[in-house]
Amino acid sequence: MVSIATWNINSVRLRADQVERFLRQEAPDVLCLQEIKTEEKHFPHAVFEAAGYAHRAVHGQKGYHGVATVSRIPLREVSRHDWQDNGEARHVGVELLGPGQGLIVENVYIPAGGDIPDREANPKFGQKLDFLGRMTRWAEALDRPTLIVGDFNIAPLDCDVYDHKALLKVVSHTPIEVETLGQFRDAHGWVDLGRQFIPAPQRNYSWWSYRSYWRDKDQGRRLDHMWASPDVATQARGHRIVEETRKWDQPSDHVPLITEFDL
Image 1: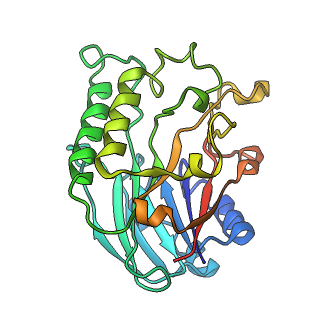
Image 2 (image 1 turned 45 degrees about the horizontal axis):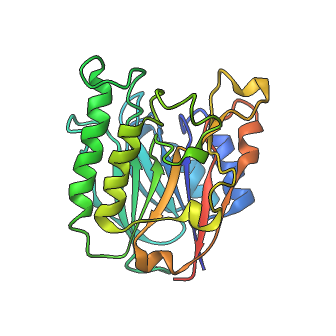
């Protein structure tokens, strides 16, 4: 069995102790982090080395964005796609070389898209849709067993948000974003592992705003995802959300997801 986790950590240096706690508690074989907000030279390598995660692929930048995949399993970095088309660090792909040998794990941080769901009024929203378009063209050519995970910044289903009607005009749940993500899904026949194991309409949130979480009204959204090639999806044996991390001291606004595979 191989367990793979994903977590938007919202600054790996600020929350290195929380990552260490999570690794000690859940012990995934592979952890994909997004929004690490640091260059590779400042990445807390010693924390992961001490925890037994000797294999790392870090694609970072100063103060913003950035992704990193850390592993107890040997791996090799295979790609860094610039789907944002502006040099931002939002993707790293690796191939597992030990258990699960041959599996490609793609770690992605899709842009949030700003506040206004209009390409003309808000260039960031257009960049998000274009990012997804480039990802879709990439997915059409895939021919290897692949898992893509990360912060997609889109809640695709009506039940993936706390109030579907109220959020239809809110970036992350607008019809155009859902449709564009659907085109990406169909380009490779991706299987949404979160909904394979926690079928709709069951609650399955992974993000709560810092501004509203204190109200304890469960105003969540499912923005983080683990999607698999059809052949990889058949090997998935379990999936869970580690929601307790949202209640840790000074937490990320996202929580980790973990899927176990019989590879």
